[in-house]
Each structure stands twice: as C-alpha cells, then as structure tokens.
Length: 331
Image (cartoon, rainbow, N blue to C red):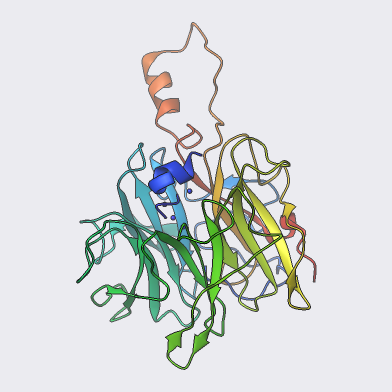
C-alpha cells in the first residue's frame, strides 16, 4: 500500500506524488478462502464486508501462507496516515482487526509476507538512524510468534534511496520487486528489481521498456516463479482515466507488452495493490470504484443516506477478490 498508494494522479499524489502467492493453480470446487461464503467468485466481490472492507479507506491485503491471517492497511480519507492492521479467520469468519504490533505510530503501508511466513516487508516514513528526510523506505520485521513480530529494520541501501520506495514483493528465490521515484528513472515513478546475492540485495535494475514509461508505474506484484508481473500504471493511452492494473510476462529475458486487465478488474476509479492468495485461486486488489446508489431519491431518509455513505463502494477504497481465471493468465 506506498507514498504510492505499495499506500499511488490520485495514488501518486497520496504518496508524495503519492502476497505473496503460491503458483497459480486450478481451483478445486470444494475449497474456499477464509471468510468466503462460496467456492467460485466470478465477478468483483468486496472482501470481508463490514470487517476488512468497511467504508473506511481499506487496501493492500497480504496473507500468511495458510491463508488464515490477513494484514491490510486502513488509511485516513486524505491518505496521509496509514496503519497496518491484521485479522484472522475464526470458524470461517474474519475477526475484528487489530493494529499490527509494529504499526500505529508512523505511516506504515504495503505489507508483504514472504512464502515461508517468517518475514513481513512494509513501507514507512518512520525515522531511521542517520536519515534526515521523511521519505518512504522499505522496512521488514521477523516473525517471533503467531501474531508477534520483532523490531522493524530498515532494509537500507542500495534498495532504499534519497527518493521513496514502496510496494515490495518477492519471488520464491528472494528477488525483490518494488517501485521508486529515485533519480534516473524513465518517468516520475518506475519499477525496479534486485536479486539476492548471498545475504545482500544487489544494486536495483530498472525494469525498462515496455513496462516503465514516461508516465507512472507503481505497485508490482511478481509471481513466485517470476513468470508474470501485475502492476499499476497511470497516464497510459489505453487507461480509463485513473490508475489501472496491467499484466506482462517474462519471456526469454524480456517483458511482453503490458495488457490492461480489462473491465472486470479496472474501473473508472483507481485500481491498485494487486496480489494473489497463497493457494493461487483468488486475485485480490483495491479499488476506489463507486457502487453505492448515486441517484438522489426524495424518499431517502437520513439513516439510509448515511448507511450508503459509510459502506463499501463509497469511493474511498475497498478490497475486492475474484477467481484467478478472470485474469486470463496463460499457463
């Protein structure tokens, strides 16, 4: 969730301008994700209505490997303060969220849990020794217990820069993908990756064309096998006016031309924070689409009005999910 909205222009301006997933698998009819009341979700559906997605600014989900705990971001309407919350599944229902033990004091967003569940990456504007600016850096915490984490650690250079970094996601071999507005990019914000060499990340490489453009690219979700990438782009000729989600494949060391994910996913609002459930069955993302009744009716009473204004679909930001098949990802 960054200064980007990695929480990303609406999102970019919110962030200073401004899940890990298992391999994509064929769904099995009898399985369902925690908190879902049906095995097949063929259209965008609000995730955890009333608990996770509430009518507040809710975004950027990431799941523990067993899919039973979700970490996500709740923001102020102006998107100037972000807090990481978590909820766990109890008898098929999501529990009342709690503030993550490492969050709540500074602006924290874009959580990402690694495949082994032992580390959670996030972005924050919290102070760091020797740092004099309040830009966004990538941080991480190590798991200490079921819901407990160690002290936040700044990932440091060469990942963090004088600019802002956001939305860290990793492959199963530890390759880190992220967004940054560091100097030297093709546009105001670009996507980068850094390979793990020993126990340190190498100098980040710009993903280049056709992914990065003169416009803005944010929030890269990389598949665990590094076969495809879903990211948020703004200002492109095929866009819908806001920020849309795009899909590109890695073939023979090059990226294919990004393809818009289409009307089922993208809307006149902003789409961001793409991720896939640990079992590979469901696609999750955040949208500021409006689904409440916008037609004024003289018979609408005050309580009905407030119920719509304070419910998911009011245009602030909600988390949605849909079957992975809706993306048309090639085998």
